[in-house]
Amino acid sequence: MDHGKADTDLGRTEERVEHEIRIDSLTRNLLDCYEELDLIYRLSRRGLSALEAQDNVAFILDEAMEIFEADAGWLMDVGIEPVFRPVAHGITYDVATAIEGSVVSRVVGSGKSRLFYDLTEEMGGVDVGFGTFLCSVLKTDRSVFGALCVARLHGRPGFTAGDLKLADVLASQAAIGLENANLHKRRMEEREAIVRMQEELRLARSIQDRLLPKHMPSLAGYEVAGCTIPAQSVGGDYFDFIPMGGDHLALCLGDVSGKGMPAALLMAYLQAAIRGQTLQSVSPAECLSRSNRLLFASTDIERFATCFYGVLDAERHSLRYANAGHDRPILISSLGKPTSLEEAGLVLGLLEDTKYENGTVSLEPGEALIIYSDGIIDATTLEDVEFGKERLLELVAGLRGAPADVLLERIVGDVQRHSGEAPQTDDMTVVVVRRKG
Image (tube, rainbow, N blue to C red; front, side, top):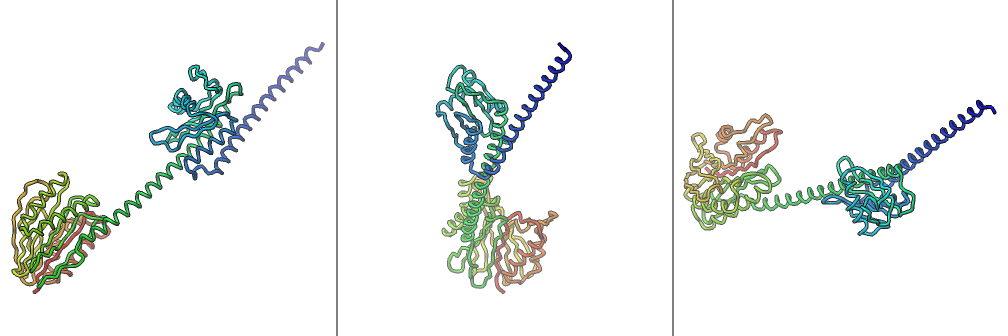
């Protein structure tokens, strides 16, 4: 017997067997890759990102049942606000809940998918009818949504590591689809919220516009003009003219702390309080004292308002006024330089029992009173240079004798030209009262 030839043939046989094993392994790997690519292709064609979350999970479960030839399957959700409702095939709710409590919750908590060869053993000897079991976590880099579970009955072939890998592909695609659907839902909710807010602001602005004077009052021997420019859709500044019968006209300019909707609501409350006191024909000082008590009782300490309130007597050509922390109005005299009214007191709403003093100023022919909010003198350029009180005094000094509407237009126009491209940061309000002459 030729032992050398026999050894050679044996060596060739072993080499051929090893070669066939490698080919078989490569073939299986190629098939696994093909199945994975085919699955991704089908999922991409389905367009999970464009579907609703519930449609996503139903489609994923159908795919899983077919791919893994499973006897049962379900997708469970996690989180306080789940993005989908659980779906299941081939399993009752009670059994699925029992498996989730014993096995699935641990897998989801670890964040790592698992393959179980004996589900009964994993559940501490409780037999729920299934043997091999796959649990793949639905997760992205940002979120964990739940788990994809498939199972086969006792006696059927077990799942493989390749099945687990494919389940992870399916779960990953499902999680991406769920995340996209969730983000889309949030964007839609945010867009709807923005639309609602814009509509509410539009309505608030419309209501606020109706609270402001629609027409300038007509008073014999006088010109009256006023305007307000809010920094946002609604503002905390307001001005008002309240006829009191005969030759008397109450006028008011208020500036509530803050901006936007909270300031606008407080502004409306303050206007109602001022008007309520005006109807009782009390003095300016008493009007502000009563309004202060109302504001103090209805707001917290962080909310307050400044207010200038006066009653013009067109027959005697005098203005009786009181000032609650407001910028002192400017009187443009017919001869000398502009001066500021002196009487002033504490802002409204800060202390419950605040007393105010009445002041009186006479208006000679051609003289004008400029009442303004701090948004006028606080307006800044891009370089943070304020318009300032001195600039305002210099401006109105050169406008002695100008009609009320011209004064108003020049003040607002010069402030806006000063600010240029800088954003408006505070409401701007101006009221001009001028005696003709």
